[in-house]
Length: 106
Image 1 (cartoon, rainbow, N blue to C red):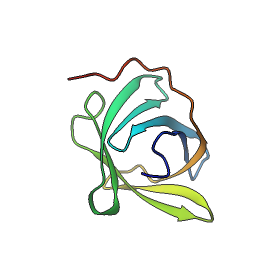
Image 2: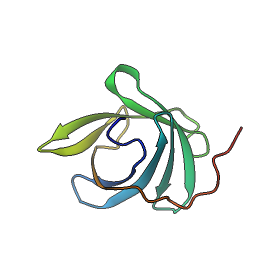
Image 3: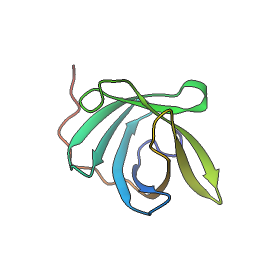
Image 4: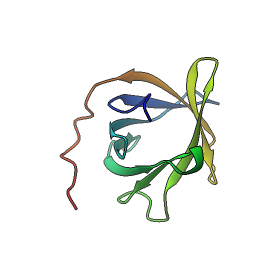
C-alpha cells in the first residue's frame, strides 16, 4: 500500500496489454476505480494475509475482489485470487485526480 497510496494507477492485462481500468488510491483504506464503463466506484481496502482486497459496494455485492501483489523485474504486478481475473501489471503511476464525485459518507 505504501507504493500506491496517493497515486493513480493504470492496470493493464498482462497477457494482452489491454487497459483494464484506473484506480486512485485515496488512502490506505479507500480507493476509487474507473473501469471500461467509465463509472466511478469507491472501494474499501483491506490487506488480509499479504493480499490487497477491494470491496466495491456499488459494483460487486458478492464480496471483495482480492489480489496478491508482487514485483516482477521491477514492475509491480497483481495476481487475482479466487476469480478469473488473471495477472495485471500496474503502470503509469501519477497523482492525477480521476474527477470522480466526492467520496460518499454513508
